[in-house]
Length: 396
Image (cartoon, rainbow, N blue to C red; front, side, top):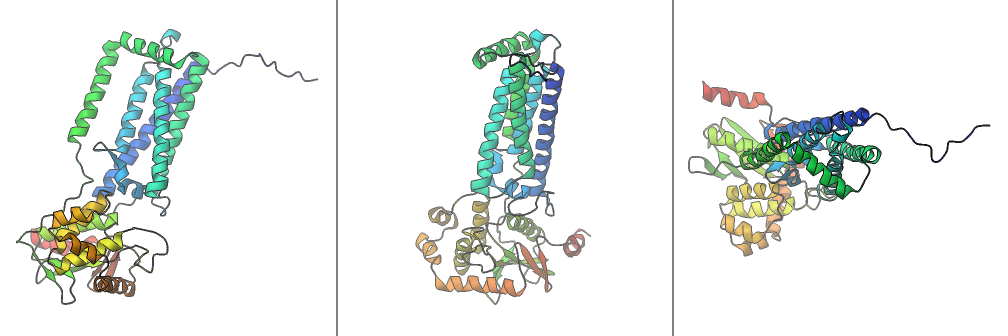
């Protein structure tokens, strides 16, 4: 007969070192994922052709998450906050690496910190689900790491330092104060670094349109489409854009810089192509909500000679994740608020918008931004070889 194990039989835990190395490996993995996300976040905003490996679909797209206003907190990208969190977790683990059992402490503090990481993971998952509508694979991996860190910390406490959490946290604090010659400078340096990062971190995610000056000509084509740049251009670019489209905003900023740099070489012509299901027939489900109304405001501004001021403002508002406040738009553009409200219902403006959309459809524009150059359509960005003659010619 087989004898069942006694319920009171003591289960021997793994050696302490196994748990410590597991926690170290998880924290290092989290740090690596955070750094990777930080690099990706930076490239999303600064590299015109960048597309991350997990930009797979509308639902699974790291770039969409990075592009949202929720990816920044207190003037610092969330991925950098994650790296800072894992760094401080590693610092705490460094104090628990002693072979002396009396010194194998701070696990209660680690558990509380991991619990905060996990709660923040739940919050971010909710934002991705209900606000952004897209998920980041690397972020999901980080959520898993956070919950594993919480479980590992809880397990170590249970097997080596059982006791009330509050009392254990007090002991952890006393332990760190006992080693304040090492802990105080480390944590002070960490805090100072965080403050300096907040104060001086470059806001690379903030696009600033070059101001529309008298040096750069503006006007309208014979068909009534706004243009900026050269009156007799060497290169004419027709852009089909959506004010809610991140890549449109990034590319438009870049093209406006080129126009400002080569005002007698390049002409940029604007065409509206909102990927809003309420106005665009090729969009079958809710997407870029409100971009159709933003296009109507832009059309209204074009009729009174304020298009580029309105254009820049709309891209800026969309980039900050703000809802359109007609009073704010009126104050910043100098346009009458009643005229702005009327533009949203103006049938003539809607007809002009539909002309742009139908023109895009005939050209087989399937997404934004798209560019028409010398009768050729380019989606997403403009090949470097097209711009090279302008840039190289001006430099020579």
